[in-house]
Image (cartoon, rainbow, N blue to C red):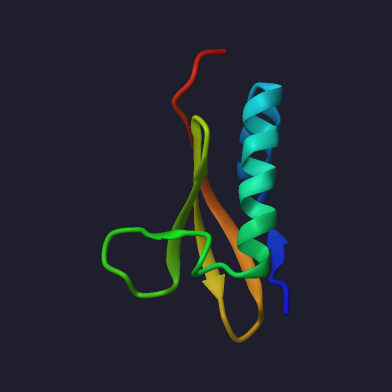
Length: 83
């Protein structure tokens, strides 16, 4: 079962400010993670199975997994490329 994706408004604003290729990379990483979030992400700090990171190219996002609600919330986005 796929997880639903949730972007808080401020994080979505940050997403919209990314360069086009970074937005594409993050979108692809998040689509994969929606299908199997543990397989397509890495632990963020201690591996609690709830706070994870997804990354592709020069962009990384920290996500919160709601296993009971099947919700994946993007908490923050980091971009290491140039604009």
